[in-house]
Length: 246
Image 1 (cartoon, rainbow, N blue to C red):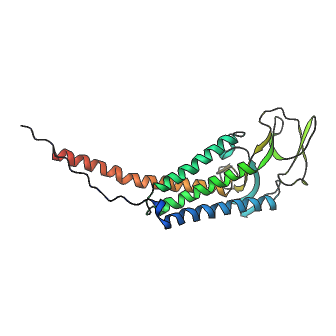
Image 2 (image 1 turned 45 degrees about the vertical axis):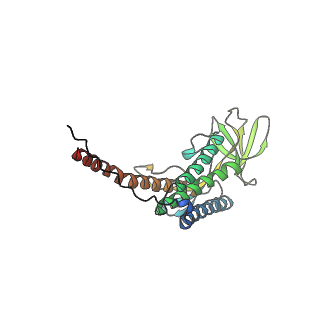
Image 3 (image 1 turned 90 degrees about the vertical axis):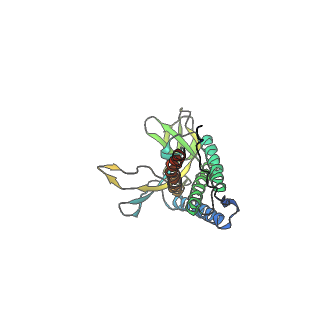
């Protein structure tokens, strides 16, 4: 008569409470989210009130400069004209952040700060896409130009710097491209000047919200990797115990 294999009973650990019912976890999340959002919106306002579009102001010599830019797309300017899609994606991201927070334990403090950064970055750029509109011209001869429309004639459109109607005027032939016209934009103003081999290490202009999103996502991935590693290491040991018992 063959003997049935003996399978070790799984170890039942007490379930940890959700961060949703833990005051300090909420404090970490909302301090990071509100602090990051205030920093993003204030710096955008300051930059666009202080600088002009033809100005480059050094912040850290040969490393970081301030330069105004308006982005009608998403990251790296991709997807100009797809603002409704980006707004929907931002709302889904906010819901996913709250879902991850509710499913986390109070001990995951770095995860809570990371979720706060992601929340701040998403809301900061969502605010711009729902409140900031500029006129976009896709000119075949001069490329894309973005600014404030001050006059539209039968044959030309006239733009000036965003929110600075007294600045230098720029004339364009009346655009026929369907992607030209008023579009939601995100305000960017930080540029990395570091280069290697004649190529910029980061050629895109960004804002505080973008930086918070990058840092937050990086910390989230690190959290998921460190959480998964012990689980994968324990799996072979559990299989070996079952095989030995058989």
